[in-house]
Structure formats: C-alpha cells, structure tokens
Image 1 (tube, each protein chain N blue to C red):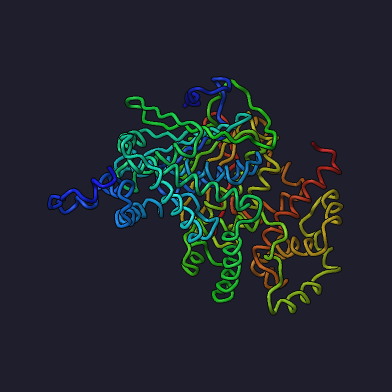
Image 2 (cartoon, each protein chain N blue to C red; image 1 turned 60 degrees about the vertical axis):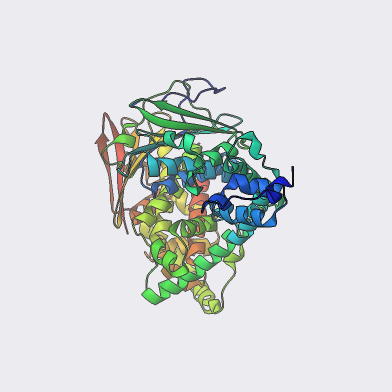
Length: 265
Length: 290
C-alpha cells in the first residue's frame, strides 16, 4: 500500500495535479514523501498565519504565535485522515487553534500582563511624549499609529492597558525627570487653597484632604489651572498616560469618599 | 423594535433581555467597538483572559462576516447582543442581509473562508439562523463561568431605550444593564470613539474621565434597567445622548453635578451640556470637541 504512491508510473500531471492536497496527503502519509509534506506546509501556511494573527492579536509577539500555530499545522498534517471525506482545512483550524489555546494557558499568559502588550504600552508612552514635544500638543491615535507603524487598534489597546496596570514600569521616571519632580514639589503647598475657585461644597473639600498630595496637585492643575494632561505631565516629569490614570483613580476615590461622608448609597 | 428572540437551547428564561445590545452599521471600524465592549464585559464579570481571547476571536469572525458579506458591499445594520447567564457568555451577531449564511457550505475555500470553522472551534455551541427577509444570525455560547456576581435584570424584556435608535445614534447605539457592566464598558467605547474623531491622547483621556463621571452619577437618574447611549462621531466632535432620564430629572445636571466633584469634570470636558427629548422620554445631551 505504502509503495503505490511512489512506484506507480505517473501520468504526466496536469499543471496543478502535483499541488492537489488529497494526493499530497497520500504521498506524505503513505509514502513518507518529505517533499509532499513541505508542499502541504507551503499551501497551508497562509491559513496558519491568518489564524495566528486572528487569535493572538495585540497580546503576544506575532513570531512566537506563528511558531505555535505552525506546530499545530504539523500535528494536523500528521493526524488528518483524508479518507473521512472532510476537507483538511476543517480539520486543521480546530487543531491549530487548540495548539494556540494550550500555549496561552500553559505559558501563564493569562495571569501576567502580556509581554507584547506591555512593551507596546511603553513604546506608545515614549512616542506620545516625543510627538507632544515636537508638535507642542498631544498627538492623535492615528499620528501615534503612523509613527510607531502599528495599527490604531494596537495603540488604543496600549492606551487602555495603561489604565489597567497598577504600578508597572510605566511609572518609572525617565532620564531628565528630576527637574520635573522639583517643579512638582514646588507646585505643592498653599496653592491647594485655590480649590475654592471651583466652588466645591464642604464634603468635597473634606474628601480632598484624603487624596495624596501629588494627586491633589494634578487635580488642581487640570481642573483649576486648566492645564492639559500633557502640560501637567511635562511639569511633573511623568508620562501623560500616568497622569490619565492618576486622574481617573483620584476622581474615583473622591466619589467614594464623598459618598461615604454623605451616607449616599 | 423589541428585543429579538432568545437564542435556542438556552437554559435561561426565554424572555430574558440581553445585558448588552449594540446597534451599529457594518463598517469594518465598528468591529473594534464590539471587541472593546466584550473586553469591558469580561472585566466587569471577571472572565479568564484566555476565555476573553476566545470570545473576542470568535465574535470578531462573526462580525467580519457581516462587514464583508451581508450587504454585497453596501452599508447595513449589524446588531450584537450579549447575554451573561451564570455559567456562560452568549453572543448573538445579526444582520438584515445575508451575512454568515452563504459562507457555511463554503467553508474550505481558502483562508478567507475560515471564519465559521474558527467560531465552531472556539465556541461551545453555535447556531445559525436565517429567516427570509429578516436577515441572518449566529448565536455563540461560550462556557466561561463568571467570577463576579452580576445583578440580575428582569426577565420580561422591555423595549430598547429610544435613545439607542434615535437619529443621533448614527455611529453607535448601545443599551446596557446592569450598571456595573456599563461602568466597565462605557469608558472603553468613548476611548475608541474619541480616537476615531481624531481627538488627541489628552482629550481621549478626558473622554474616559467623562464616562466615569457619567457612570458615577446617572444610575439614579435612569428610567428602567437599561442605560441607553447614542453616539454620533464627526471629525473632532463627539455627540452623546444618555437616557432615558427619569421624569422630573431634567434638573439632573444642576443638582447632581455639584455632588462628588462631578461638576468640574463635566464642565471642563464637554462643550455643550443639556437635556433633550428623545422619543417619549428625555436624555442628557453632551458634546465633546477635540
């Protein structure tokens, strides 16, 4: 049986006959013809690549994923039974996806911040800073995407990701930040009194006392002095993304604190 | 329009309203709104990240089918419903044309036809439905238990909030219940929409602050279980309607905004703030500019 495929005198094949997956499977699985296997890999690599891209989007370096997906393809090639009458593709898709899912679970991907996303968040942070100082104002997502050669979704994911990370390397000061920190401590102090400008009621004023000094300063700069987040970031020597996160967090704390003092559910 | 019929073989009561209902057009960029909604939902109910990845991948395939095949190159509606029964997440993707149907017998014609096998590989169960003149739908169940409890919503399905389907909801209409879901989803959606309107990263962050502020304050003002939001995106502008407001809550902004530091946030962030009539109820109307 195994000999048939290799010893049978072949009729002159039609231009595509050598590429026919059914025949290639016979040659590989019964004749152990490596050439047929390579041809099958070549034919189904676009499918594999496309699955890796679809499944792994924005979370893991693409090359790693493609490797895992290719392993899935090889497994599928070995296990596929052409006599069952199904197309190889309908067998390969779940096999390849299964391999990638197992990889994600085994690599502890779910419990850690995904490496790819984390690196990208840092890149976006630095690009944001660079473009802001170049243009004098914060960039748009499409400007960031163009500059970093990412697509918009990857940039948006990175912006979202920075909201979620509590204290990541995103918070580490960059070279030259020392000046900013000095400015930051300079801005503290009696100026806090200017909160009166926004006519907050007593509850909010009381709640503000429970917000850390740096966050209070950020709130004031944004909502009293009307600075943009990028301007505040430059003053304090931290990233705009971090300002964004600190603002969201301290406003949330304020809401909880005022609700607690007011006894509102 | 009322809520559409429930998915088949559901172990939850038949008349259950979806937790999330998205009304979109089938443009490719809208798939990202669906993906971000799923991410917010997963965050709110504590899904495993790996499960979220499965759900996002499968639902993206279903949406891509609507984008590419439902209307033969023309624009048409894409509706996505999400249900969160106790031990699963169900997602229905529906069109008014011929989205996923023609792809079923055709699933092995090259890499572009792998959508259905991907969905079948990732979802625990899948049902396709096609009703003449009513379009096609795919219902996917993902057996992924939530780890955070979710307030239940009434089984009797109410009407969609008018604001979701009003003229203003040109870019996006969404109804969400309960509010804990909305709190996780709305900031993500506004981030995507602000990026689409060419906002700077500063202003994108402001849009998220606004979403937080709204979600901290609106629940008490909303009439019914579902928060309805309609959004229209123009270059450098976002227009939002949030409702339906409870009768007598027209004074929402003057009263509630002074509480809890909301006032400075909203006033700094939006350029217009008011109350408008939408259908038979009222909605908060906001405009953000880049």
